[in-house]
Length: 172
Image (cartoon, rainbow, N blue to C red; front, side, top):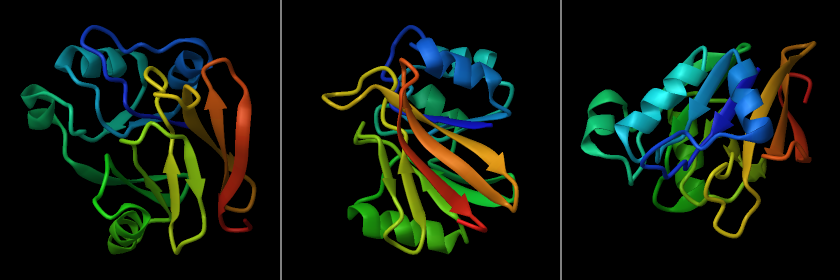
């Protein structure tokens, strides 16, 4: 499983709880789309995740910016994921960012709004924020392999409620 989180906005701990904590611990890969805020919070995530891919956010301190890139690309279950915290010009810029990296999915954060958008050339997924939802649901995203080269994706609350399900990849 790939678990995606973002926008922790913490100065003292990972602030993971409930289903989100379980999903991070069970995941083969955890992706964090920025805004840990303090290096100790990044360290907490590294202790919880078996494998962590992360990028910096606009609120991350200098120590995090020295350790992490602003953008990265990785593969999971045969699909290419491009990850960034945000891009000016919204969905259009995020789609362009993904196309430039031959990505199947763009993971991003910043707005704290859990989002799945398949209207463009590249699927866009924002997991929301598990710790500071700012009026939206406290959430994260999960992706699991399906037969035929696709992934089942879902947006899940900290309490474990799946409120959006989708499929990305071959055989969508």
